[in-house]
Image (cartoon, rainbow, N blue to C red):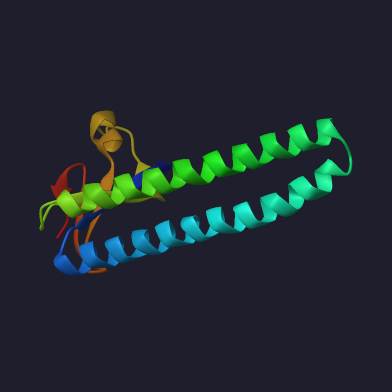
Length: 140
């Protein structure tokens, strides 16, 4: 026998409660990102005033830094909005992938490697484990 590490897929059955929780969390992240953008604008003005005292090269470096920071936050905001839209369009009772955990699996001589590679899944509904699958088969 040999024990190996194996990924376990976690899936969530999308209920109205889960959907609303995810949407609320995404909205919080979007609002936080918008607040970061506003803070960046405020700090950016201060940074540029300080850079002006050091010359044109410092101003250009500060502008480039601010632009990079702004672009990162805008990209994050757009990604969050896209996720929000996707979740809004999802049908209830759909199984949605929600990450991966790692577990150990015992392997014995004669085991089917294909079945081992199929792995395991944990299915949650409103935070409760409702099903465990090994090799694609429900575990009782």
